[in-house]
Image (cartoon, rainbow, N blue to C red; front, side, top):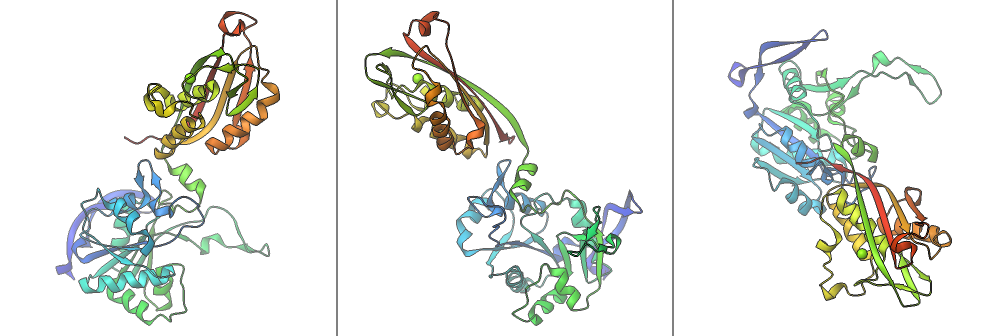
Length: 402
Ligand code: MG
């Protein structure tokens, strides 16, 4: 056994206190890491399976793999449909990673991973959910330590809330624990247990399979931060976001015509607004506000008025583009407030249609869209009906990535 051990200095949890202590641990050369990343993540709907969603500029899988950067043997179980997503996720990593395609269930996926790892004959394996990207070294070390005395080791946490059955009966919470990953095993033991497992059996985790086979199991200390990203709220809470605001202002000159565009709605006003595009002063101010919030210049940078391509263009194109830039940064628009400044036309009859149009373009709930109007009491260029002005303020949350 000593031949497989080296001395590592690390923290050991003792009766609620931490202290530095030297104990023997298996060399990481003997430990393979198996990351289960083949799930479809349908409890947190998004454009991609949750392990490929971005948090603060990185995919969940990228963050998870970085937790195991010191381990020389990493096997990732992926879904065959996710090959491109996977390659993007690991493109910036210089880790020794192999992949294998997973099965229809988690149990089948882990079995495929263990089969692929068997060629390397590791002594131990740490099996970890790709959707737990906030894993601390301390937890990994706790699990490795447990394997020196037990066949399997699982990080666990006590339950704080009172527990009830569906019938309302109280469950003794001191008799149950919440368990996390990575779950550690002696490789030969868990490999054989999976080989012997009837095909119809699907287990919630790997400790369950160790338990079915009578393996000795140690529960070590887990950590609340080692959350499994499951629901949309998990992503929102764990993303390191900041709130930002942006303001925009625009003016267009009134000219001869029959109708004008304001906030995406055509109004038969008996006059028009002059401009290279459709001159929708409301959407222009709003577009600039969004660009301002993400410090992405102004509308003229993205759609130069000198470019004939934008002559007569519908301004919802500009607004959609700004929204796409926010999306690309993993941002979320929270609220929009547009103020139209003019004597005429009257805005109130069109206000709900304007709110609905902006809500549709920005894919936001209408309750978060404000459109209001004011006059300048006959003063200035708006008072003389020479032009219409608009101002806008937006607030949004965005990952605070470097
Ligand atoms: Mg404009």
